[in-house]
Length: 400
Length: 95
Image (cartoon, rainbow over all chains, first blue to last red; front, side):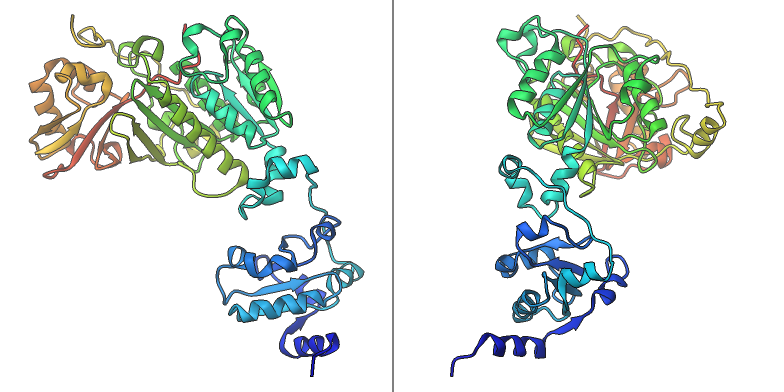
């Protein structure tokens, strides 16, 4: 004899443990994965804090991504407590051993006066634009909303800044600041892919803005057409969530480092030379800062810039994209950054090497003593920049 | 013999070699062997007092010797010693 809906519901009630909204509200943070199995249109009207959304029609396909451990506690809810019972049966068939359904659903939760939140609503166009992000559990609409509300600062719209800016813009980082006072030169176009042939002579910040907005109009570009100096660094970096460092002078790099540590802003650093690149992420107080790594700059002859030494265009391309990857992880709060690790890239070998970096306990900028001294308004003295002169002149490419 | 990895910027001074095999039981001994063979490197790597310059980091098997035993850090057969001066180039500004 065919079963009725009432039969199915009775069976589900008999086999699935039910918990009250009060029980769920009393769970400690992370005490269970709370899954909202309603339709997307219902979810958008509001949901339990920290819940994940998997529509009942997708629950079998997506639960393993959200809850890989079949013995982990899972609480399902819907609007009234029926759909979540049936969804819980599916989970039990999949081998989940600790599944409960919240009786009365979201209606009972709200009636009990328990807290709920409305998700950030992406427009229909944004849902389509970022659909590949929305499919990733670690990003999803909450992560995408976070990116749209984030601010990244690029020091330089050059070889490193170009690919970083393009990918951050494509990813929907809502505000991208660019510090650059240069104009587009023909010799830039071998690698600085933000710029184009018809923009030679144009200000780089303006050229960058055009390219970024042509790619993604969601992004607000803030041009800082000035050289980063002691008098403006605090003002320029204020309010940014992450900084992408593409500077090529040591004085700018130290200036940026010191200001970013004081404001607790992560700096994703890269540098390139011919076929090689270096990359690390300086997260204040979590890993070393630039001064921990190199307390003093080398003499100029030991560290020629790209305009002297040259660079294979794709090398800053690769390093700049790795910078964008670091920045996105920082903004989303996912994964492990390169804090405390220096990544070397050799394009000729196609090899990556990783070196371990440590915080210098006597660092004049990021040590405990330095932080305390700054707080008292008497920052520690920083050893002089003057590097000892080499006994013999260094000639790139060998002695003549 | 340990393998000393030479950064691009210093390669012209070691005959264009990307790596050099050198004997030495400590970082100091390896650096001595290197600068004896290629004397023009000495002022790049060492201060007048014979200490490592602060703008050159030396790693043994990926670990910074400043946090090991400095020049006294032991180097075993086939260990990788990497010289790494600070690199200038990001490269947005070419002036």
